[in-house]
Image 1 (cartoon, rainbow over the protein chains, first blue to last red):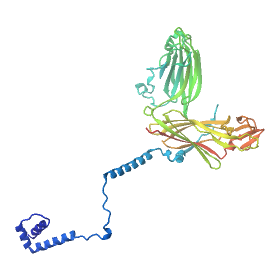
Image 2: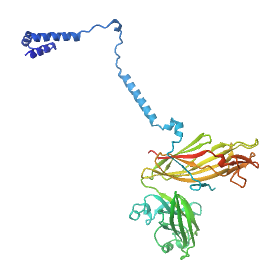
Image 3: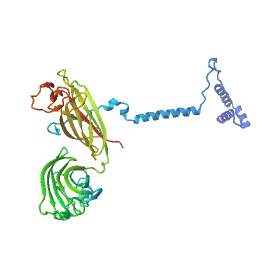
Image 4: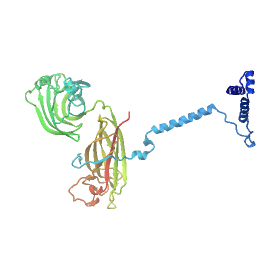
Length: 123
Length: 364
């Protein structure tokens, strides 16, 4: 029964419409009254706030969201990604010419053998 | 096997299946080196009339034989108009329907480093003198892939029907039947010429090209130039030039690897400093066959030349080459009897010239 009185008072504090007779009965319950006082304290604690100091009075207001600017930024980011991908797909030799022109390290080294597969050229 | 007459290619049913998966060809490889015969006629007014060819897989120890014919339009006229190549039939039957019949037989005895050694026997018969060959030959040939060797040439009559072709040429040769799945492959070739001087300095030149499967791709580099110190103030300014060029040919194999042949020639000699490589040079050539993975780089060292290059030490004189009969020089560069002499072995001592080859299938 105590729990019911407390719940009724909680609902009343939250703005619900309650049965006056049942409210009266709840208020007659000492433990329910204590709970009501606790509700009041809790609300006071939540609602109370100190005023801002003078130094913060001129805080710039929150930036207004501008959809056009956001779209432009997204477009620019997409362009950057596209350019980066394009460059990544281009032949490497376009950018690192010296390295591209140099031979790779050979996996094997062989030799034309004179008298075997190398001989005088006839002209 | 097929023949062509004018612009029309006519397949011979008896031999068209040489590389086709028919019943008669099931035991034949689908790709690989081949032995070939060719016949073509020459027009009076210039150009080629009829051309035909026959092709069989090259299998060491397995003989191949063809009949080549010319003058089928009217055999009695002894012209060369009309004809072709076939594997089957009898000589007598062929002679009854053609003015000229060649019986060509080849027996490959060795296939090594891309070169086949083949025993050749051939005979030419005429329908107006049947029963004995009017010409014949026998030889042992060494043929590289793609080589052709003319073996006979015969003149024909104009004939009653005004044959516009007056001669026929018969050739034997070698070729290669490409794998059907890979025949359309395109390969990318990267070839570097690298020269390391005696002091360790390196000069590198690069060649890049693409080519079809099994097609020759010629490569060449601008000559390497080596300064020659002059012995006398009135010497003309000559340098030693090294020219490297050649042909590279690759095939993508079914296992993903590449079969590559590299034919290289290296010429070294004197030339005017301002005029590039001159007439005086010593040339060597060679072929390497490689089995490589795509993108695998192989370095092939080119042996330094031997012999000498010599020229007049006076301005305006032409260079010459060869060992000659003059005494061997003891210095890399010397002047002997008014001639500038380069001893190649001494001149290139401590230096190293090589090719680095890299092949891969080109991206689609």
